[in-house]
Length: 261
Image 1 (cartoon, rainbow, N blue to C red):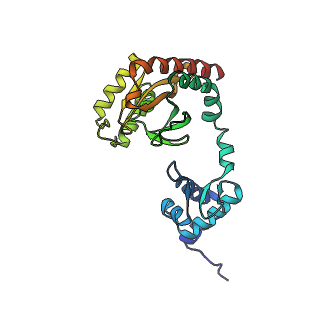
Image 2 (cartoon, rainbow, N blue to C red):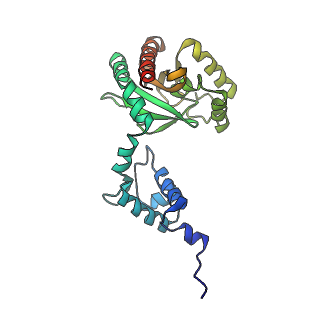
Image 3 (cartoon, rainbow, N blue to C red):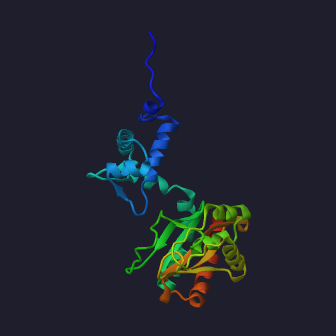
């Protein structure tokens, strides 16, 4: 008797293991971001670009694993992923080493402080300290912001290898506001000035009404690993007043992180 066969579509829609199952789980996880923290099944289907039956079956398995949670009609990231994420070096080692200096910087400036690392053409926000007057347009911890129009990204790119900078330029310098630097030549000029001054800045390039000053954090052998910034309303972020405090915090954080490695 000839064994039954299945079509590629049928095999792909299963919830079994293998790389296909991991790819489907990854697509579902990628559907979530800072502005889409809870999603209905229909929204998951649309944002993951997977068949409805595949999403339902895979999401059910992910709930059992603790990767997703579904208290009502909406899915959200499960606690298990939160627990595991704390073991990542960028969260465990970097954050623990520099957190006291982020706190000192916030105490000195009373302005939102962010810690970020480069992730492709974006900056991943690893930690953030803010007061009662939050700025909802800013990315939350775990969110990503374009590197080319953020002070965090520029502070990192200025000390990164040429191939890293070229990759960001190749990804495209999409405008976020009318002030966003979209010329590769102009961005290269901005990056070239940062090593001498020790800090990077942007004014309303990522968000209208928001300004930012950032400084690099280095690891062993003086390799760039992250950046720290202060971000707030344009009227409150004065570069000549903020930059020395940001550079001092970044320098202290660099020493602390290097000593741990």
